[in-house]
Image 1 (tube, helix red, strand yellow):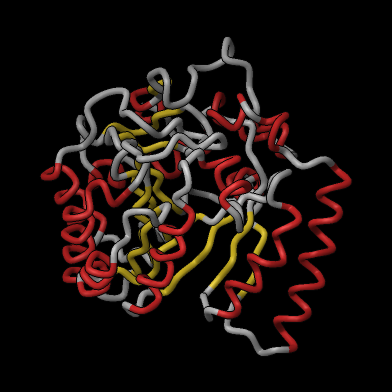
Image 2 (tube, rainbow, N blue to C red; image 1 turned 45 degrees about the horizontal axis):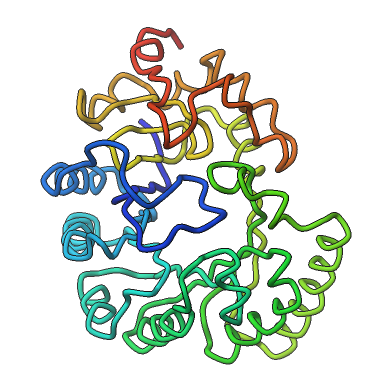
Length: 330
C-alpha cells in the first residue's frame, strides 16, 4: 500500500556525552525505553516493508551494541536489500566492535566530528579530551570494511578548521562529509547564541564548500561533501501524499518528525502492521495541528517554538495524537 523508503529508530537516549547542540537532550532516558525483545520484534516488522535503509540512532547507539548487532542481523536475514546504518560519536568504537558491526550486516557508520582540535571539538561535545578516540573509531570503522560518513556541525570555534576536516575525509577515502546547521531545539536552543554562525560566517562557509567541492571533483575524490538542511524535511512533508519514512523514538512512539513533539502512533499499544492497515501514513499529513506546525517553517530559526506552546521535546511527554489521527477520514 505504501512505499516506506527509510526508517530511523532511536535505540537509546543514554549517552557518554552532553553535547551543547543535542536536539534530543541525550544523556539519561526520561522514561522506560523499548526492551530488547520489543526492538527485536520491531526489526522483524520493519523488515517486511522492503525499506531501502534503516538508521539506528541515539543517544549513543553503542551503549546497546549487542542489540544493535542483533537488530541488524534480523533485518538483513529477512530483507537482504535493506541497508542498515548506525550513528555514533565514535568514542566507544573499538576495532573488535567495528568488525562485529560489519559481520552483523551494518553498511555504514555515521561518526560525528565537530572540530579538528580538542578545543573546537569540546566547545560542543564537552568530552574532556576524547577527540583522539573519535579518530581511532573512524579508522577502526574504515579498516573493518564499513562505509564511514562524517557528520559535522560548523560552529564558531570550528569554522576555521572546516577545510582540514574535508581534507581529512578525502585523505582517508571516507564516503561522505555531511554538514548541518545548528537547530534551535533541545540543548541547541539553550546554546544557540554561543554556537550559531552569523550570516557573514555562513557566507564564508558557503565559499569554503564551493572551493573544496571543486577541488575534490578535480581529484576524482571518493568523498562527497553534502549540506543537510533540516528545513527541506518540512517542505517535503507538504508535498507528499503519505509519510514516506518512519521516525521511531526510544520509547516506541512513531513521530511525524524528530523535530516536533507529536506522537502519531504508540507501538506499545498497537503494532506496525496496524499503523499501515489503518492508513496512518496518509491521515497524519492532513491533521490540522500537524499541518499548522509543518507549514510555518521556512528557515532554521522557524524550527524554534515557545515552550508554553507545545510540550518540551524529550523533556516532557509528546502530544499524543494517535487516536485523533486514527479516527480521521481520508
